Image (cartoon, rainbow, N blue to C red; front, side, top):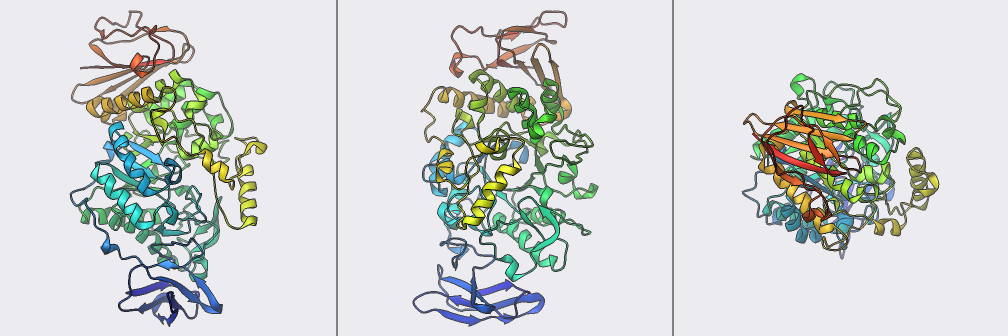
Length: 600
């Protein structure tokens, strides 16, 4: 086995191999600050440190496994020993993605990769096509969102380590589910972050809200860039991941001639092609800049899709009436209509909520390049003070907005439990071992979201109780209306898959009409095949007539139906709309309900 590490900031380096008898073996220096050592006949699972000058023992910066946490030794892993069963898996087209975001530690009582596997049948039966995992790299302690990770190559030990993650991905592919992994290339966490002792991984030229910025354009940047690009290829090739979600790319700074995201995108997509796989990069950015996902040929960075926060903000602001923080830029029904038509809509020269300029239109960005959601980990925990949609909306509103999500021309995403109306909060939690660090995180959390939360109400991230509150219920059948909501989401996803007018992600074939005062919205979608889909929404509490045009519509779903938990006293809309004209009264629809029609 060969040990190799980039460590230009040390004069000499050794490998300490642990066991019954510790062996400290000096490494040979090479060009560009690399040290290497070949140790023959080394067995899998052997643990080791790198010994730096001054007696400092540090884990491997590219450790595949940290079984004793961020401060403990690294463990040798032989990737060839894992037996994959997904040889025929080639991935799925991006436009087929129906995403399901989950946090490994709170999705099951056990909080492990293996514990997710028995629930995959339910996710497949729901209709989801892609499981998205929040970051899994080794972080301090056993409770964390994952964005404090410090070993990007080591799946977290308490989750089940590398073998547990591979078993989960293998099982997902066996069920026809793609796997998206959230990765963090804009910073590393503060505790257990030893990279700075090895090389110039970080820079003071830029600042991020989460810690030192990664050095992508300063002295020594080529090896830093390689570290993160090879991490992306590691997940793709060694773990068979189908897509990476790139966290907060607005915190990735690179003033060089080729932005790190351009280089990463080119190499990642080339490697996927060589492997014969469909694989994707999905970015998150709060800059509202389509350049993030435009092709390199037109000056873009090259990722394939972008999270669309404006979609969430427009719905939550209208639903709750909240104008705190960046929700203050939203709130009207017209903005919901605009997000359905365009995706990103906030193109103003200055954002009061972000305290900076945000610009550039997304009108030319295809719907298949935007991920839409009403809930995700960030927005529940931050914007909504930990409250899920089931706590913010009435039962009927919940169903109505589910219909809006799956009829929109974007890639839809659910957050774990959303499909059955989970009410457990999702809060920010950590388990740092350093009391001073824990205190600063606690205080920083209060200050960061002072505009969205009363400071006295911010839960303590370090409390295990905060973490335990976030565990979702294991059984869909427990609780009022859970089965009905699951059935509704299942039907909505099925309709989206079956009907080209809903499945095509063609924003240019979308039309939206609405009345702000009356509180109704009508979404029509078309397909070149001639198929059409119509979503009629009454957002008001009382029944009302909603004007419609066109003929030949047949009812496919009504959110107020008894099978979806509606009242038996409700008035089901007509099964066919064959005589509707522009001068007719239109469709009478019960309050806070939505109806989906199809036609040709």
